[in-house]
Image (cartoon, rainbow, N blue to C red):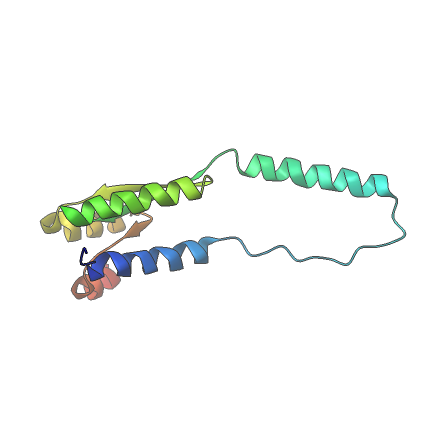
Length: 132
């Protein structure tokens, strides 16, 4: 039986929280009015369907930086591929950054206002990233 590393499990939890936080809030249901004609209701439903189709035309693309290599990289690639397959409206790009360069790249991209959408970094670097 394989021993599961703690790092991928933490990342999965972080990704789940991020994607849950990014999800749109559920639509509020308004009570149906009995006096309206059925034709008006049908037109409104068609309009909602058209709007939903337009919104899904362009998938959301998210960039995820991490510095995991070897077995952890394989696991992360599988998790990202599974997420992309289960969520057709969201495309996550898994980008490996070497451990020694990760902080420099993150700080540079944050300073230039072009950071990745998500990044996994060691907790010891958190104060530096917050200061950036």
